[in-house]
Length: 324
Image (cartoon, rainbow, N blue to C red; front, side, top):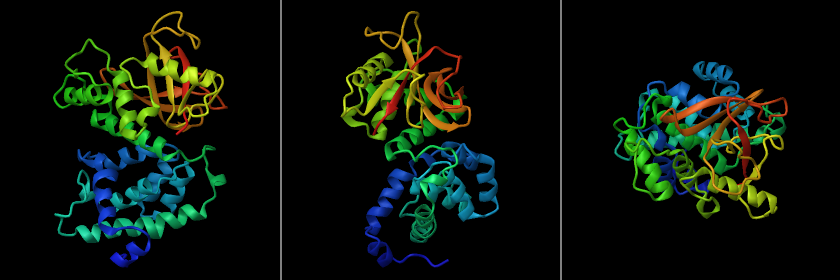
């Protein structure tokens, strides 16, 4: 394979060193734990629809077909698509960031750029959005990051097997509290629910800025989103709808009440819970939430033929649409 030269990269309006710094610090952060089931986790992370077909194409080395199928799920994130091919070519690098200290750093980083520029980008240009097999449009960059971070934390908690009080986990919960809502608690404070701190932390990490109502109580940002929807606030980044009104998409939140007599129009504070939608397919959505079974857990909910939430496992009463 002919690698891109540094001049090629500059011609492509990219500064080579800045590009590699960004690749090391941002795109590959979530590979830090060396998960032995990397391929399954990466596929599950962002291309749950068409999973088996994509996995089969990837294992057979059919890279162009792999990218086409992944694009067919609605994914348009060129960096995620590039990572999918790169780490399948280099399974020995599972759990490792690209580092200038690596003997073959330049060759590997140029290969990554070559995959993106010579394979992924041309295919993204060729395929019309009308070919998306799931019927949903590509998520925004913010929604992609929201989903990625949620999956990252799900993997960190060993897909729900690692519990809040265990070594490593209680410190992570402490990050959710401190960085998410500014409180000095951690996973050893087992009588204090941390699910809203988790949502707030994920929102901050994804880059919501001052557009999200961060709180240790879900009802604070739920009521804010509903209020902005009722006011038809054109600047709102999050708006709350009744489940029968809208179909939740990847990057949206679905929420249920933990108390009786709570409904969409309740304006006082109330106990509740929200999960992040991370995948959607016919009749189902996958959601990830914190403090579910004392971990970060993924579960599957039922939707109808229109994609609207019909799941009866919880009293779902609001869908918060992410408009970023």
